[in-house]
Image (cartoon, rainbow, N blue to C red):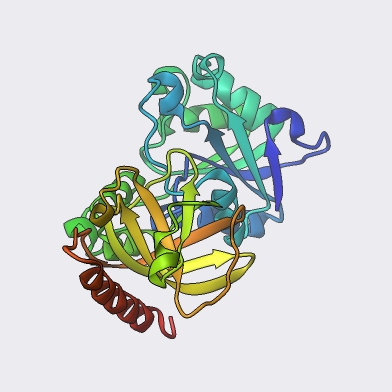
Length: 314
């Protein structure tokens, strides 16, 4: 899959394509429907499928400080999109100047002149241009004038998560924030992931016999609620069952909120400085302050046992 940052990186001989545009944070099951439809139409027409997304999140430019927690940083988002069969991802730098472009100018610059869109696939609530003035009706009008077809795909996928609320990035963020990993993972179609670099911490886990990878997460990451989770730690391509702690280590009067993963039954791992991924499968318990180290160790042993059972064979 080709990856472009900015219009100037698109090859000069780029031909017609099928395009879909959006933030696609998390690439959840609703996103998968629309991207999958774009790939399907592209294969029917024998032309490439292109996903257009933005960096930073538009809200951060329009209302600084309002950046929502990210379900997937852009490199991870690109990986997930590539798995759906997309041929190219275009990341458009979202600037104040760009946000002030009219819907007509956006369509002309991106869809017509740069990507030579043959078909544009969007959801019914798609908005674009300055002050989100453009909608799918206007997109259809512009398409008729500029020789591209607009197809609107219903993204209203529902399940048990959020009491049947339609799947969305905002729903997923709320579920992650409350530690409802079963719900979040239902929306995503996979375990929620947090990434970052392993840094040195207080090394209390090592002293207690449970050495953990202390993950300095990517800025704006959607971190689950404080507590202990079962999941996996992936480092250098190896996926290892893990017991994961999120919180401030109240037994030791900690104040900094951390994400720490213990790779179950692994000895001698040296992950310092490595970029790793932590996948959250299930919530085990809330964060607790224990009266003694022995009580903490007993609970940690139980956490590891449950995490091992939940990840076994998954």
